[in-house]
Image (cartoon, rainbow, N blue to C red):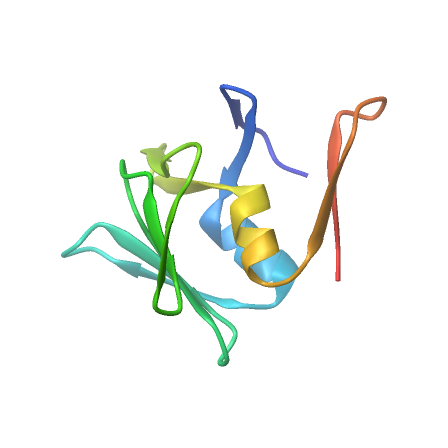
Length: 100
């Protein structure tokens, strides 16, 4: 469980979603990017930019990653779906459910 939503998008700390999915996460301070990788696939996001890459493919996200309280927040659905997970919203519980 985490604590952030922005403009209808559920945003979570990058490390939280990476650990939940069992993927590696790396902060690249020189470029203000965060990299997620499971060995077979790499997702690269840039703070304050809606542009992302999954492998060699470019995408535009609905909401850009941002830094708050020294944590980088990312769009949970974008990351989870990038790693082939199913994402559903439970309106009653106000919860995002992720499954493989």
